[in-house]
Amino acid sequence: MQYKCKVTVIDKKCFTDLQEQYLADPKSGACPFYNIGDEFIFERYGSEDTFWREGNGTQCAEAWDCISRYIYTALQGGSIMRNWTNDDRMMIACCNDGTRPVIFKIERHDYLVVKIDGMKCEKCAAKVKAALESIGGTERVDVRLDKGWVEIFVKHGECPDFDEIINAVDNAGFKVTVIE
Image (cartoon, rainbow, N blue to C red; front, side, top):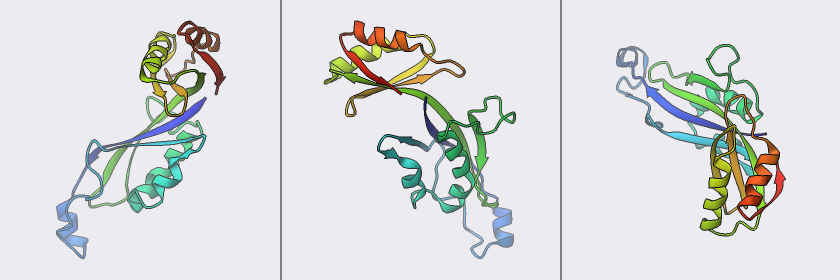
């Protein structure tokens, strides 16, 4: 099983009374770095390692300090917040700026990488995707045509049967070379 982590900005707060009372710039306002609805995907598979790249200056340092531990845990396949949230693959956290906090939803996404021989064009990709979407335990299928593989995102607590994956790809006219 492989893991990605999706971080979504779900809210921002601004406590002007606290800013006026305590900050050197009493009109600092809301966080200028993030907007509600911003999404960031972190992954560590093959040559992809966006955890280090995203954390190296492209995230607010205060926010990164607060959320990076949860992202790292998710990327290792761990429980982000066991017995705290209704899904241990998810966490709600915020940055530590007390006058203008940003609230994040952090989600672990579990997936299988299926490397496929012969998938060369968008038509091939669509055929493989349709074949794999019908397999039990599958939440969604993303085709990475540029990489020659498909990512099968699995439903919580489930995993598609490898033989079903192989048969679906074979029936679509292609060949599975690796499932990771």
